[in-house]
Length: 151
Image (cartoon, rainbow, N blue to C red; front, side, top):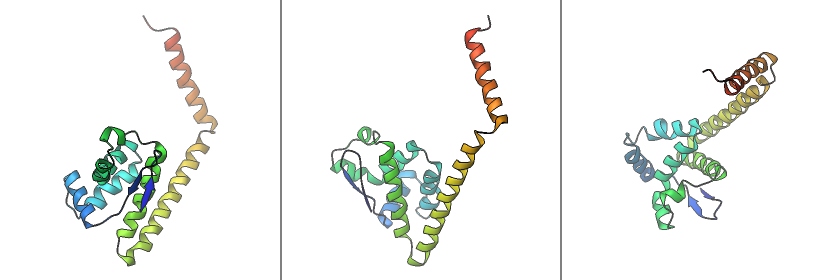
């Protein structure tokens, strides 16, 4: 699996036993636990900082070969991180045994569906008059502290 960053650099996100071993050393965890414990934790967290650390561990050798420093790597755009995450998801699915791939893909699809539902519910809850009143009260309270600070 490959993705191209916003600077036109191509990155190979292949997964192999060697990749798992390198990640296990990088994170100092058991190779049998690296996908389950570390990679899935990072992917679920949604943190670009965590993704950057994970992808640097995965792509460090490629980065160095392209003259990309860790600081350059940290300057990836959010779109770059999203593309890299999708690429990693597919690479992990491709790395699993054939009988498990369908289950992995179904799990990923379900997680995306649930994330979308949670996002939709969060947006809908913002229109709730009770929540709006609470938020307005908080904003007014902060505003009043700014305008007339206690002495």
